[in-house]
Length: 229
Image (cartoon, rainbow, N blue to C red; front, top):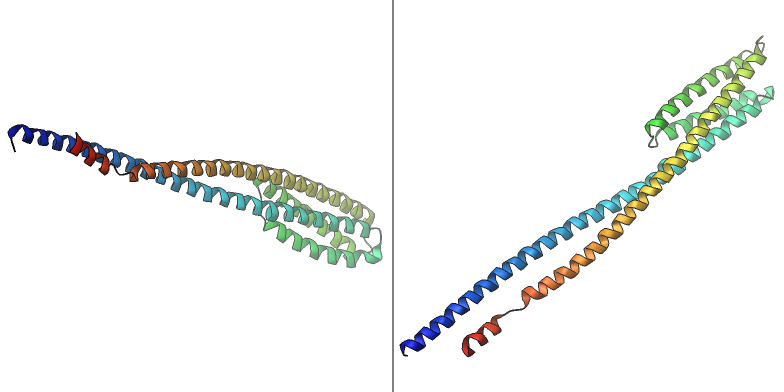
């Protein structure tokens, strides 16, 4: 093998080595890109899971803390109205009050166990005070049938019932407002979830393309270039 031929082979080898370095650099960059994309997909998956959890919490809260709570408020209003009607009949008053007050106590406990906003908590405490005062008026009427100021106490009790019903109406309006707010929050979560799902699909397509580029071996082209250049 003469000197000129050796020089030619050396140049070819150097060229091949440089091409391999370029290929390895390209592969490394593709691997980094692929890793970054996979990391983004993992983050999007976490966001997707968080959105689903938030949406589930919102739907659960709409049912348990709003629809059910509104049913408790309705039950309290119905019971108070029943007692108002019973005031017109002294024969039924004692029995109606005993049954109604037991129902009221149960409904108050159930309502208190729901998730209350700060506004609801303040109004609920006021409601309980109003109800306690009505119990005192009822006790005076029931246990003192010869009460000299009976008519006045009955009127005070009626006024107290009206105050309780007004508080219950305010609580009912809060249920509607909070339920609407939770529904809007749930819709926002669903919209965000749709966006992240589309982004996840787009990134998966990019991953497939990068994978195809990374797995296409240039070895044959290098060998061909080496022996025929």
